[in-house]
Image (cartoon, rainbow, N blue to C red; front, side):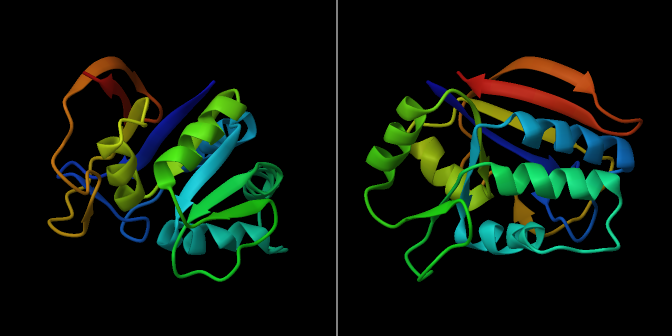
Length: 176
């Protein structure tokens, strides 16, 4: 059975914003390795539209970006949306019965499946489907933006912490 993991970069004050701060080369390499090992990804519409960037070829990419794109393209993706008419390669549109569909995906796969996007993670948290939360804590204060937790923070228990880069700490939590 797969493990659903919600993990994102987060500011000290709890916001996620890929335009305000991004991963260093060391942290990006960490994300490449994770993408290479993942059994798949589940996206909400907005996050999927951002990630579609990796479907296109960019000749200016360095080796790390090429490796991430290859890993992302290779894995299956499920996109939760009621507004999209279609999705790209290796992606399946999820429109109805979110809980049953995600439970089936978990049962049919092994390994980690990434959950991307705070709104989707909130819905899956309410259904009791997120198994692990990974917060990549950056020394940045934004003062505004989209919070990591889209709703009330669920009760969590810290199960791990490690320094990923000089300034970034990964905190791992499970539902309490």
